[in-house]
Length: 65
Image (cartoon, rainbow, N blue to C red; front, side, top):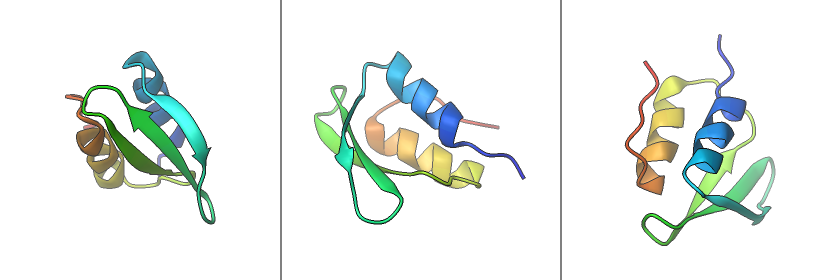
């Protein structure tokens, strides 16, 4: 099964999203300047559906296939 965590973080970085802080457990909080919202990013993303949901919440028009 593919690991999407690094790929999601790379896409977030490319769209000028920035790390805000560590959240509870193994989650991190990122801020998206595209829509002005904070997004929760898991550190162990194993599903492309979860990865795509994170990018959608960030306002990024990119999908893993």
